[in-house]
Amino acid sequence: MALETDILTPASPSFAHSNPVTTIDLRSDTVTRPTARMRAVMAEAEVGDDVYGEDPTVNALEARAAEVFGREAGLFVPTGTMGNQIAIRLHTERGQEVLCEARAHLIDWEMAMVADFNGCQLRTAYAEDGVFRWEHIKALIAPKIYYRQQPGLISLENTHNMAGGIVTPLPVFEEIWEGAREAGLPVHLDGARIFHAATHLGIGVQELTSGFDSVMFCLSKGLCAPVGSMLVGSGEFIARARSVRKALGGGMRQAGILAAAGLIALDEMPARLHEDHSNARILAERLAALPGVELDLHSVQSNIVIFYLRGGRDANHVVRALKDRGVLAGAVGPHAVRFVTHHDVDRSACAHAARIAAEVLAEA
Image 1: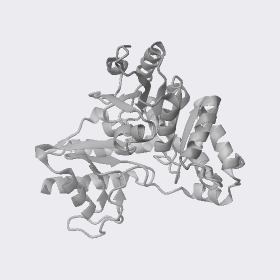
Image 2: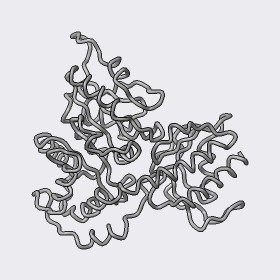
Image 3: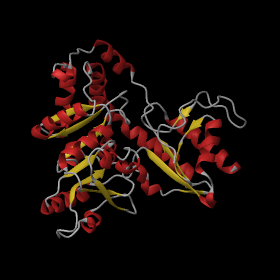
Image 4: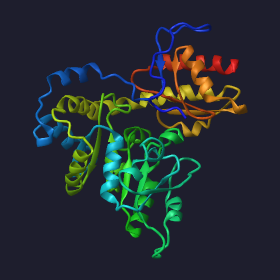
């Protein structure tokens, strides 16, 4: 399986069938460059030592994140993985189980830190459409018998990356929140792309996440910030989280330079995410029409398009062929390829990428 960080070198600008002006990078929405406005505010950012709590720009970002999500406090962390793992550390005890969907980011992309750092075990269920419901979760909760370990946390993901960016609607969350309260279990949201989910549903992130005990969201996935994620929750929770962040090496000192871009990402970039959704739909519709491609258009609800290759075709071979023609994609399984739309790839580039994909698949 190719990671989101694979294939880092630019593709060759020359190839046999088509000649794009530049490489079209659809590997991930983490490849975006900071906007001109971000670069300007980063250069002028007021800074201090954040480990002492004295960086005014970091403090402003944390307060703004808490306000947007209707929480008491927020914490700026270097990565979404750190944010998720801090939350797990605070919600669980060693030896407990964390319940999540079988393709969750916690499983494939966080370096087994649920076990290594937090001493917990993942218990999963596969949701056919990528939407992890209370019926899945309830079946995972062991009877309260002394020889069965109990879960300590439910972790959800919205949008769900490896399910093709599928969006979980609010009523599904509301049922989970109610069931979790009755079961005495906290619920954490890996909301790396929660603004994409809110855009698709047409509701605010505060309403969409109101029942979670903690929420992590990324500033660098789709929102163009160069670095950083946020963890929001109660004041007491974030005070404890700050200590765990320091233990993990997350004390970033004069981090206001990064937080300045984060403020732009948080306040200005979500308003344009519908453009990425529209571009993903264009890609998906053209790919779905190709012979040899299996793609459920219903699953394309945000900025991620995952398609499957019929006939046992090798996804890594297809990704290499796309790269040779100037289009970067990712293999996310033996026969699955992923495109992710973002700020730095416009509609014409997405349409061109679809044409290149048609050429490559016709040759294959």
